[in-house]
Image 1 (tube, rainbow, N blue to C red):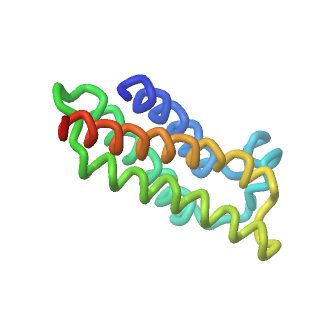
Image 2: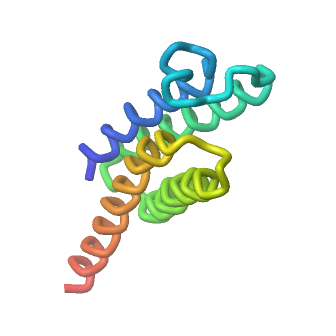
Length: 123
C-alpha cells in the first residue's frame, strides 16, 4: 500500500504540473485548453498537489489512516468519472480518459487494501 501511495504522489504531481501549465507542449498534447485564466489553472494545480501531499503524509505514517484512504477512493474514482463523462459529452479528449485511468487503478488498489485490511482485522 505504501508503494501505491508513493506512486500516486508522483502521478498527482505530474497532473498538477499539467494543470498549472495547460498551454505547455505536454498540455497541448493531451488536449488541455491553453486559454485558461491563471486563477483556474493555479487553483486546480494546487488541489491536485495538495492531494499529493496527503498521499505522501499517509505513506509516512506508522498506521495508514483508513478514512483518508476512503476519501482518496472517492477523489480518484470521482476524477475518472468526471473525465469519462466529459469525454462522452464531447468536452474532453479521449486522452484525458486514458490519463485518468491511472486514478481509477489507484482507486481500485485503495479499495482492495481497505477490504483486505478489514478482513485481516476481523480474523
